[in-house]
Length: 99
Image 1 (cartoon, rainbow, N blue to C red):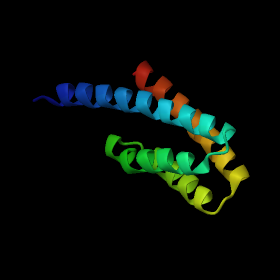
Image 2: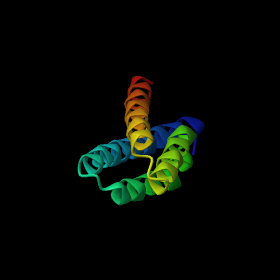
Image 3: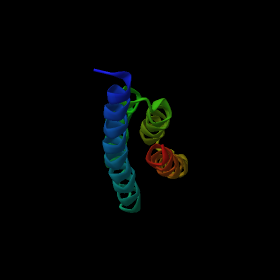
Image 4: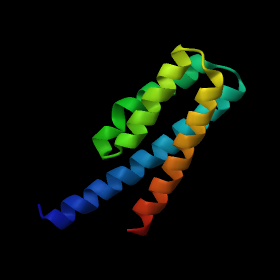
């Protein structure tokens, strides 16, 4: 398989992952509105485990921070981090789609 083909496949996988991550971030926001921080923690844990596999280590880092802040019951910090995650995903989607 050529490098160009590998790059194409990686980009497609990254696009799929970012779509899933975007849905998870929206689900986190909905869970925050319901004050269900256990659910926020679950979604963050899922993203933490997969972000780095697709080359998005920052998604993994933020998701890990969200998970920890949920455990610490730092609701205000969770809200800020989820918004940061959502903004990052939007930015990454724009970058991937423009390449």
